[in-house]
Amino acid sequence: MNHEVDAAVILSGQYDLRGYPFPYLAVLSNATSGTSIVSSLLTAVGLLKEQGWELVSVANTGTAGLHLTAFLKRLT
Image (tube, rainbow, N blue to C red):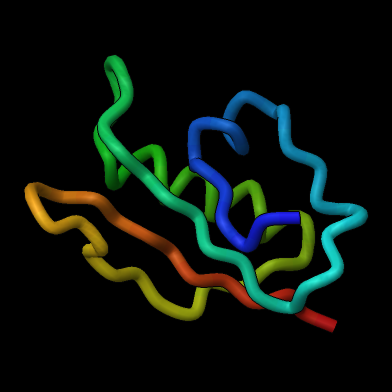
């Protein structure tokens, strides 16, 4: 299982974290059609908050342009 997931996958409802064994998760956000990078990332983080995840930090992880990554931890 990967430690990274794209925000668009979370927003589409295609990612199930119930079996995710790790305490930390990185959510990546790139430009999507009709949605800003920041909006898609924060919306995905909000959905994960409802499932027991907490935002730790956000960083620009791109080398050319804006590519945001949110780092989350699972609340116990």
